Amino acid sequence: MNRSPLSEFLKDTSYHDGLPQRIISGWQSPSNIAFIKYWGKRPEQLPLYPSLSMTLERSFTQTRVVATRNDKRSPGLLINDNPVHPFLPKLSRFLTWIVTEIPVLQRFRFTVTTRNSFPHSTGIASSASGFSAFTLCLLSIASKATSLVIPNEHLLSLASYASRMGSGSACRSVYGGYTVWGKTKLLRGSSDQEAISVNDIIHPSLLSLRDAILVISRKPKTLSSSLGHETMKIHPFAAGRIFQAKDHFKNMLSGLKTGDMQQIGLLAEAEALSLHALLMSAPGGAVVLEPESLMVIRKIRASRALGIPLFFTLDAGPNVHLLYPETDRDAVGTFIETELLPLCEYSLWIDDSCGHGPREISGITDSDFSLV
Ligand code: DP6
Figure: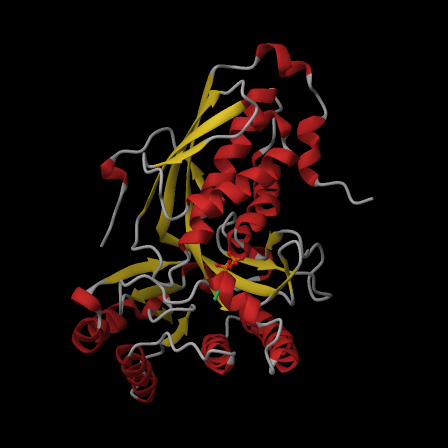
């Protein structure tokens, strides 16, 4: 039988008599941008093929969880003092799952304060950063409650395993740099159940890669990723997509090893367009790009003819991520300001880059936030 890695929290149950009344934990966890897109899933939140992403630096969620003893044995959850918070149903479902895996958590109710450094539900993966931050808080609380000392590296691996159940892309957010989620013969240690860091095979120049996120629209997403994944179960092009994604993955990995920006960039674009083609050709035909998204894409492609080396990718929304090397920051900055910002909502963009991964925080204050 496959034992859950979380079952180590069951090893010692001597804590039952001396549980603390209150435990507080805070984590900041970043979002990530997929170069190879996770799209479609098998039961238990398992992927159809491996995905690969770059963890961001400035697009993050900060979450603080206060766990208070709850002798009713039914988990309670309140987010930002809002009893109808939009994330409550998804977070409650996740909590119901995790308390069966880590029973000590059933002895607490949770008050959550959480804030993003970017507008949520606009195709910037707030569920990735949100679930990874929340999971890290719960694991820290469980470890404090049980006095189980978990080395940081192991904590991150447990967080990747567990946060996947909240949101698939969250499992890639627990490591800085580049991560892969999904079993592949190309990478030793890869797994469908959790993501792994692949920084040791990445060309060093890519650890400072930049991602300018152009906010084309701050309107809430018209299509949830979860519903989008569902469409892959009946999508007429599903088999072709799986074949294509595996091929893209192999070539992306070789581009990342050699640091070939052209190869990486063109594959990232092909992945983004394939994702949107899948959305448009699914039953119901979802069009989530805005006219400005397409105008930005045209300008990016035209800029390459002028020698500016930038490439785009997209999540399942209208906002455009611009990928470019750190060494071209000045030229790209000028191009963004003059050509692309007029196409963004309120000239809004996030000047982001490859990031360092989650960090524990002791408190949340307004000054911790850097909304641009
Ligand atoms: C297009 O991780 O948001 O961003 O597992 O249902 O929560 P759930 O989906 P989610 O899907 C992300 C899809 C994507 C591509 C990616 O990040 O790989």
